[in-house]
Image (cartoon, rainbow over the protein chains, first blue to last red):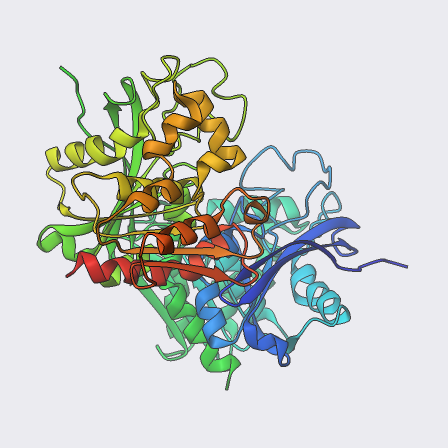
Length: 291
Length: 291
């Protein structure tokens, strides 16, 4: 029997709602303690509210988006919860997981590992899509997981787009991303991650873990917003490749009302960029979550 | 000859304006490198703009307010610059300055030390009121220091209120504070700081460095806004004492339009609290800065 009871780690009132950090023993992450932050807006005291899942980038934890994203005020006003998961298992003890900042701890890439070295612990895909909703519902928290959307930054933007596009159950109503890694099978960060986590390496990743590959094959209506900055070093180094994603989307017949990719002049990869467009993204999702 | 030339350390576009981190050799801080962040709103490209100085709390640097305060979006919309100084000299090498988190490095208390052990370096009062405006003006940056207001958090709230109330030149048009230490000669944090930095200890501090003492003696019109949370541990431990400040203000004849002290139910000492009321505070100052 697994004990996935939620334990409250800390609590902060914010914008008349509450940000609570929880931990629990995550079966999906090999029984390790997993942490997440959950912001509930003031109207959650009257009934279940829709939820926006925020996936953070390389090196981040469940705190970065909550502290620096500038999301909570808008979420409060819109009556939306925001769920901030961590970015990887913590303390798995797999050899080499703490060697590099862009692989292993803090760099789970929102996939389920198939390489036996990592597959007991590195299952962030199932952690986010299945386990977190289950433990939150089991705890009786006022979140309506039938009204979910997802967004993220950088590696988390990759996560948001791929979880959205690959969901066979249409789990999320809309997806958005700040400076996402949109074509990871063609960039150094993605290649490294996939070679490490997946038995089939980069080829295996094309099936499920590359937003550009997924949008090219997609035939369903989608609601996607992407922002990236022209002053972003990682964009300029070819880690993000938003043009590839945009081209694949247009080639697949999606117009700008279904897939909008915005180039933001002079903005970089930081949370200053994210916070600038935070309100836009939350209002974008509110259209679908409150429909 | 001192070289107080500003060197750009980093730059981030935010809300169509720019946040730039500078460093320079600070004569007032004993020749050490001092860092600060300066946010300029988009309209600063057309001419000088008013400035709001944000003083941060214990253990903080020039980054905390910029990253977590939620100030930049509102400042951009209002056309205000925001100046984020550090909270102490860094690397003075005075024995014991790194022993405690609430004294020495990260805890300059916005005073000029008179204890010879600290007086070469610990002069944050002059650093903020005189030196920073001088070096920023000398660099030709588009800041109008004739239109300045000041706000801060905790130790920085103490700084904001005392620098405002003690200024003989009426340097600041208005002051506001989140969870400020308002009566530091009567709380453990203040007593420790004053005994360390000042030759005359707590008695010397009453003249200039205690907002409650200062408001009791003040006869000029003032514009002050204070918010604190009832869920703030430091408030509940008697470190902040806003009731003392409020009583002294009312006893001195100030009404709620001149000194407003708001108790915010359930909020704590964190930046989640600050960001919740950030917009209120910036709009408060904008009334005076744009008058």
